[in-house]
Length: 106
Image (tube, rainbow, N blue to C red; front, side, top):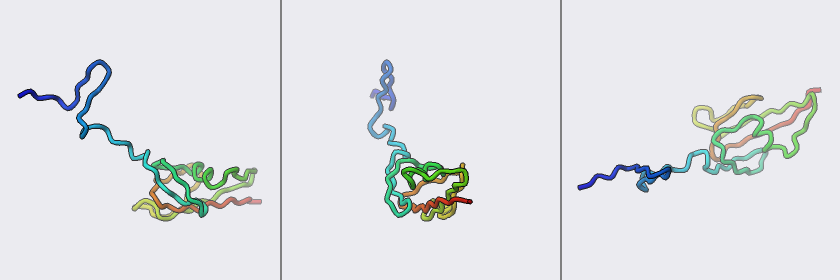
């Protein structure tokens, strides 16, 4: 009986048995989230404060005194709800809800 190794390398091409082929990475999975009552489909596994602001506002308000507040719910198990501040990020879960508010601190 001849044993065939699960991975053969011939030149630069790799051949794998079908059950050993790499599966698509989790980050490519589509997730539906709600941002300011609008459904958005994203593939990111994690999103930053700035990413969420861009989803909330096509043309974000700007100015020296402009601030954004992000509250979320229905998140990952260890932190299902909370707030994001500039520079932070959050793991994305299908069905998460984000409320993004722009405030002028004048």
